[in-house]
Image 1 (cartoon, rainbow, N blue to C red):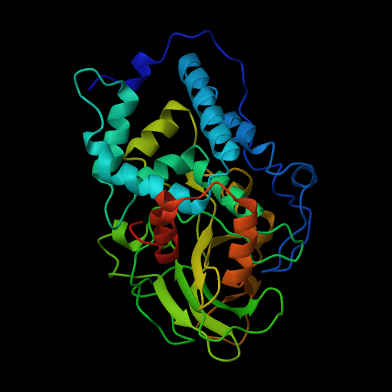
Image 2 (cartoon, rainbow, N blue to C red):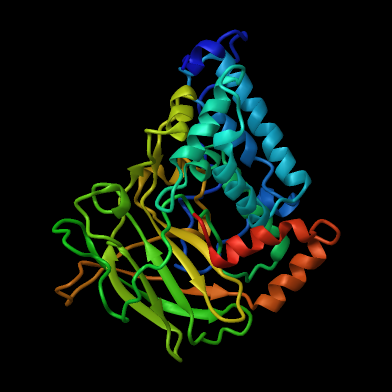
Length: 380
């Protein structure tokens, strides 16, 4: 297969310099309360969606990218982002699209006359499985998943006192993680790493009442930066677990303080990052899906404030209210750190009523597949 770089090297140089991608979204001088939504930025108060996000994705392109790559990818990102905003694409609809890409792109292009990018889309489809979603990762590196996440949640609520902020699902979630008891550890056969005791309460964001029967699905990488399905030395479903709250809505478990790591570089997403002269690093984070009967599920991540990639995330997922502080923990032989964090859910009727009003006339039966994917978090 011919190299993509050879096909995209003809346009005059566009002298954009590389800038950090998230520095306008994260104010490192601001103090935070873990689990409580931070203030809205000045830009998001005057625009329906963040007006600087698309340019921040484009500006992440490095100085070694060819002039043609710079021009073509800037145009692609602008058009894709404008399409998502113009049509107010929600996470449900985007997930449906990802599923179709993963299922059908292996047959979408003819090798005889297809452009090089088409081969990369084909490859993303072939590489995707129940353990890795390369099509989703490909959309992550151009900021599309983070954008539709913002659109969905701006449509759902404009309140200052809002549910916990959402973040992208990422390509390494696995269904049916082990159900664990409160206080158990998700860490198995890993001798290194900073043990952490994480705890908090899951509440109704309007009433503040604890939610009984809420499920917290958690997963993160090992200290080597690999999820368990990437690492044959880790036991199956290591660093994953599902916990269910009692009447007090509280949860607690032991995990590791996360580490920054590179997203996989061996597929189309990695190839695209190389062409754009961009690094593949993600800031240290922990993934969550929080769900409860009669409440809208939340897919989110929390980020360690000390990580230098907080302001330069390869997939543009960091939000102010999701940046947290790990605290020293004393008197516990099982952990040297603790992380208090409260999650707040919106009742499903409340969420859907606002969403329906915001999306009047834009949804039809064709979007029901996407809703099934999100509510079931299937196939990713």
